[in-house]
Length: 221
Length: 188
Image (cartoon, rainbow over all chains, first blue to last red):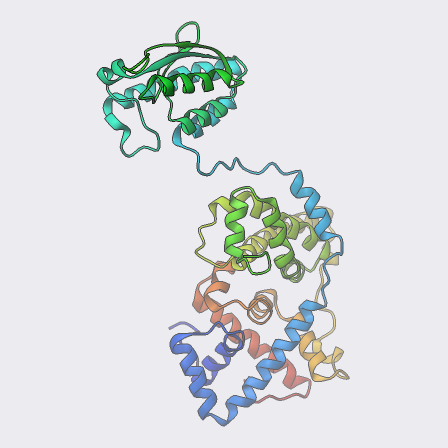
């Protein structure tokens, strides 16, 4: 039996009084203390003693004064902290691209090629991309039918920017890069007008070096 | 919701998204208590100043991993306690290195002698301060920081039964000290 279990009822109540006073007691222990206070003549005196301890402890703590400039010094220290990378809400693809961005440019583009291979493999293994945060382009037959454009990104382009842009516009990388660094992007357009608009948008991005039109939608006038 | 009514947890959520203003709000809410907790734990306001700052920088870094299983105040006190213990260990090693152990406080005057002419409130405050660290800490956490038995267990990383045992002996020692100083309260 532990020391706590050996306590007399009075000992137990005296032990719980500080928690009764700070309002954290609940359930059976709260009921027990309240019943004790209501029935034992010594209990109210004990409560008064605990209140005196409460005041004494508060006074002992309040006597300690933090430095007046603590907040300003902390603020400066906080501003100097980079903190962890915080990218809530980004898709799987954007997060992975974000990590790749931290690599030197040459390594990053090589990693991107490997990543694309992974995306394409997944597109074949999981048509429609169910269960992932990104959508893959579909089976190889599907890819052959989709509108697309060929895009080359600038060597200093940030992949996180590219990934975010692709996410926002429903664009998918379906292949690449070629030896020349050209990517095959599927364009989610059902009309030629939508297609032109999206391809124009890609070309207007600061990270786009060159955009070549590929297959347009069937009405492609 | 304005800053004054936004809960600690909501602020931690904001911190987790990189909101520095939310850290500053939490600092303003909790810094004084964390500072006092460490000051009493370590006996050094200089250490308390350093550690309290570190606690909130840790909050900035660790907010994304806060799971909300405890109150934010409990979480911060737990971080503070850990950092305080680490600093005390390091300080102890430094003392040994310097062969300067004579500077370690030895309790000097007995509480009874010092408080003969003090009133009960002042005596009680002194007795609380004179409690062994493990007993004083549970008294501080319950009376000053408003922590429950379970929360104190989390902060100190000890079982609930141990919290109660420490509280029992802490209050018993206070009662004995008061009795020795002429203030018999009838228990223990």
